[in-house]
Length: 343
Image (cartoon, rainbow, N blue to C red; front, side, top):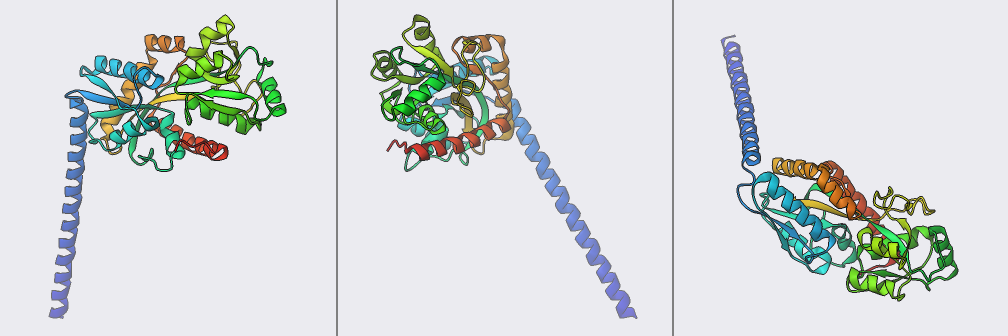
């Protein structure tokens, strides 16, 4: 009996010791969590404490660079520290993107990139980065729809007429692009896929030469950025058939979308976003996201972009992540069906 009582006492002590250990573990874990939260708060309160570089993986002067400089200027004004653009062009944006992926995860290296970010991994046999695993989406900045234009000598005045002509002359109508794998090129391939036609891509070394080729009649059609199309449409040197975005452009309210004009499901826009390396503290990512939303909602920025045929966005981080995944799947399918390659 005494032995049983002793065993019972020992069991009770062991149970109490285990309970105390468990409580200590919970306390330590809670303290650690509070410490982590405190560190995050400290990050948010002190960021940025110095200059921040924003890598644009294309040369200066293009749409991605313009979006990057706009955001950098406004972030500098709002946060009181320098946000400096660094152009690191090459390999359709892959070289600069790789630099960002391998940068410290502290919020002091960011990237503004465009739609090429999600298409390059499918266009190259060997990609230099993983667009999902190695990057933290901050915000979708803006959308830059293209305008489907034709040379005035081409006898079509609507999307349905262009499709009918292309079906009657497979492989005979050329569309200009600013290089293999560029947004205008893939916009044309998406058109081919959905319309069941075969217009032929004519690659040029950049959007400037492509537009010159189109104006000169070397190519008969092109998916041209709205800011470049507008002046030539007004003078009659090009004929606009439709805008490639989901909704009509405020700058061209009478121009239908491609989907409205007869090709259901068609949507293709250049777009611009802000990223950080994967693993960047969440509070810094949230702060930057809120800043981009504030910038894109400001009246002066909206008007400035509207005048250029660009739509200000400023999304949540979750919306941007979903957009990226959707775009990767969409364009990977177009690239596979068209056989488009860069290397």
